[in-house]
Length: 281
Ligand SMILES: O=C(O)CCC(=O)C(=O)O
Image (cartoon, rainbow, N blue to C red; front, side):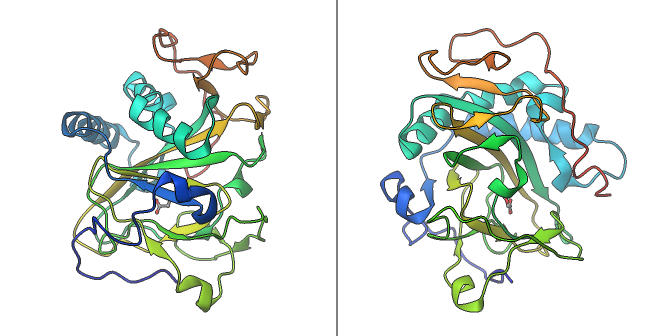
């Protein structure tokens, strides 16, 4: 599974440069004009602090919800409402009402970074009802096939089918996978990015990544957003706070935290009630 590493420069002008207009058909798009270098450096330093503070033995792939769990959670919550990201999501899903559902620092250490088998994201979120849900994959390191960047199989979101999840019984991050035939796997596109660049993918598109056997770390931050006008979130089942990051207030529901531009961040980070990934030692 997954295309193997090759030595390559990050392509700036290739089939992987899908723009937001193509998102509805392709199921993903790329933003080369990402965060500015100072902001990226700021987040790389915050990532180093999160890594240094993690419990002994915790895997780097398991650094979930930094906007709730990190000691500098405000830094990560600011990222969730960073205008470069929220404007890109709005342009991609053609929506002005947005909520932030979750974040994850998905860091693969050199030499033994875990694979993420082919999967769809929507199948994990029983608190979320609707199809307008996307993931921003923000590169904090330069990522390419050599250090096991994410790969996407274009157009597999079409029809919004929920594929069966099978157990992997293997040493991978999720422990589950969907079946992908060879002729489909051949279409996989590596999402090669420089630090600060980002992609956006649909929650139904099939994606994953190989093990990182290279000598380079592979760090990214995923941020999941939903169109608040078309997606409902059951707050009693959602295991972390939901944040309203953009809109005119018409879809700001009770219990959702309002952090639109100009609003003061909440005094506390709220609660994270899931133990998923914690056994990954
Ligand atoms: O980081 C990866 O390789 C996979 C990321 C992923 O599965 C996701 O963002 O949904």
